[in-house]
Length: 491
Image (cartoon, rainbow, N blue to C red; front, side, top):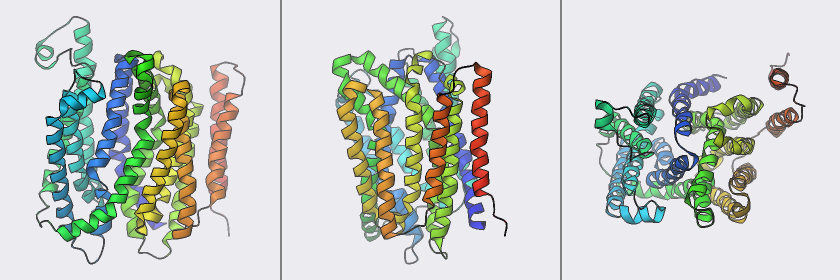
């Protein structure tokens, strides 16, 4: 229990910067969807889909590799850190330089010929985020959770402050015909949604500057032999990461590529915007998963040296699923309230994808939990193969059904992908690194949550009071069931 309490405590602290931080960024969704039309929000959604790919590409598995190699007894921890930093600096500088040189060609390919500045802005954003990843990983490894939280929250606050200034203040003031020194000096209405990207750019620069002291600790030189060993370990993780991002974000890119010619720019971007806004609602589970992963990854590596870590991993999975199933049910029972998180009713037509995506993210969380088996056994190639397997499902389902069902097909593709990866990973894991997961409890909680939501949709409409009273009763029933199953048994 002491180990579980330690993990819970670290998850709570990391949650201050990941859950709370992302939740604060999450609160920008009402601002953006309230101000921008569905097609304008589609631009934001699409551009950040590309960002997800580039961040994985530019970090190329080095974060996990850092945890792995810096904990090996025979390796020099400081030289590992310096070698990884040196590698990332070189690759990031090359990427930014190429992006600047070929910005117009890339902008034409993206079908934003008049906004080549987007290419440069995002090259700097993802480049600095890639460089920041290893200093942040070092803070996690050294259990400097408060310093980690301060850096990430500072980044979030700068981003939010600039969004509020440009989007929440300058834009409506300009639309109302008002002007003052601030607006005349800092605001150009032609930039539009670009101010969302500028805010992110400034925040990324600010975060990088905060991490410069950690970067300067990389003074123990570059070791070519260590880098070679690290790259052998991390390349499968890069492939897995890219395939994973295909599973997570390719649907938005495919929606544009497959619908643009038939529906035109405005309708296509509106579809992407509607899907992207409702996807934001569904990732509330992902907020918890991210905080958990920040604490769990170094924790799992550390516990591997202890006695019977498999039993601990199984218990962690059980509690993890309880939290995810509770979030799923809570969101869906009160979706009629939570939908106002998107103030513009034009986006509500896409609410039907939320339960599909929520369940998909539950499966993804379980898969992340299971991934301990291939990371601890150095069989990272299986992680790559699993992600490629999921990517094949994502691409196939989207390709076959987007023309007829557009973003509905994308939601079901996400569920099919993560569900298949979860099942495949379980069977492989039991072969190479058996963990005694309690499958009865795990799927019992998921089935119970989905069933109670389904029951709530079949109850006749007798008014809001009855509706929310019944749904609250269903929620209490679910929590009571968890308590009965999980409460300590009397000896």
